[in-house]
Length: 466
Image (cartoon, rainbow, N blue to C red; front, top):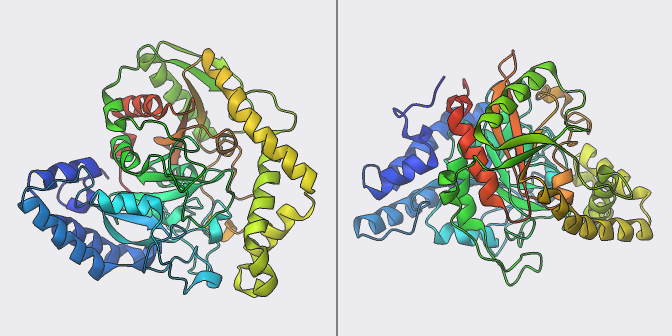
């Protein structure tokens, strides 16, 4: 099934934006179209935890009036979007998909929400996720599992599963998720859409319920690369109240789609990223690399910097301690309010980590984020599969090993910009993702190749059968 214009909710964000600007469609029409699809499909997908229907329609009317009076805030003006429910919203509950926070209503918006509102985006609601973002399936949630719009018995990936399912099925024009080990790119891959994690420090994390302060990133999930660039352009930028953000100029990311890719040097990361791939994924990646050969100057093989400990070990030590530090008070006071799988993971993943081990691992992160620049002396971009295997059944989703973060978590440790774009389907019709990784703050280069690949293929034009 291909996306069609007969349902405006299935327009790309860019196409909808163009129509709003030209007054060919109104923000109210877009909002109502999304709400109709939510009413019909959310009972199947369980993508949303909280809907903000009346507030969204009120906001849409106000933004429509602005358009009629000649005011144009930019490409997100009047565009309905969704937010992962670990991103604080003033006056709207933010649950992190946990009973512990089921009635929690923040008093302030996160910085990214403030930027979205200023840009004229319309908030439709808050999306379901793997509880406290601590997992890759979105099966473990106080509000029940999220379902994959391509196969309702399959996981949508996680932890931003609701954001991905909503964007893929036309329940919004774009959404925000968070990515600590792959939680934007994994669900994007599983749901056949685009997910982009920018450089650590490019986007503010202030106001996001943390999993790991050192690894957390906020990023867009959209149906096309152009749409992701438009959303990233709004949320990116220095936040003087967030010490993790970097005060560096933010380019016009949307211009990246006009960049030439013919001089780019690509490095394929073979080991371990291509090890033990599902046969369908191996075939899709071989075909994708052939396309990339035609789009770029060179395609060779490369490796990441050597480390004193494996990247996954560094990741686990840092994330485990930081997650436990955030949750320790509630684990002592109300352990029963966590899903069993979440509670056990938080405790187990920090149990054997000594303070000295954490400090050494945390220092290694800082050193690696400098050392990795040397890789990009020889290549411009890195290429891997997003996931080594297709999405599993929801019934298997509570198992921490159900989703491999082998190919995604290294780039949270390294803090590099990384995107997942659709590159095929399995024989059973499940999406496959291609991951493109860039140098620090080289988001535009990542977007340029992602867009060129997207335009050279048809995968992004398919929509789920729901």
